Image (cartoon, one colour):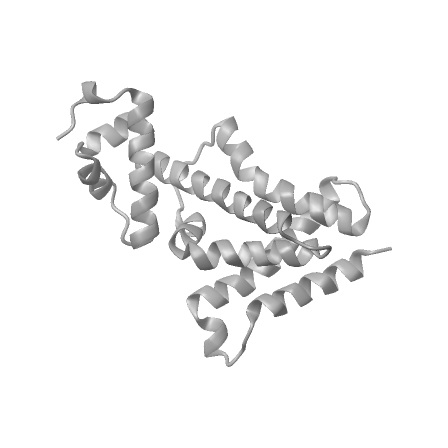
Length: 196
């Protein structure tokens, strides 16, 4: 069993977060246990509460890290893209969900009693939408403003629906194939309709 003096608070935070991310990736939200995280690092559940405030605080940190990794995936997809950057965005969305199904789902499954994000967490989570909004703005030759931000979030919701059905197997159960191509087609239709 670890002792508080074995690690600084920052070291404990990193240790707990890394173990929490690994457990989430392995087990998913429904089977996630903060006690298991504590056990894996050799500390008690009380240490997690001392560092993160409560289990919701740990889950928020785990999901914020997922947002950061997801944004990294989008940026990598865009960096490797040819001229079709919208296709790269859709591909990046699907790639993160496909490669990290439990972490991706936990973002939507976690419903904290009262979530208060730090400014750093808000910025990290907001990066994903800033990437999408910037690409949508470029595709439409429009500035990023509130209207465009709402439109970009709507496009993400469209892709999310297709991706969610794909990850859960619902898409295949309906006899459908290639949800990524279909999602991209819906996005292209929406973009075409939004052009002046």
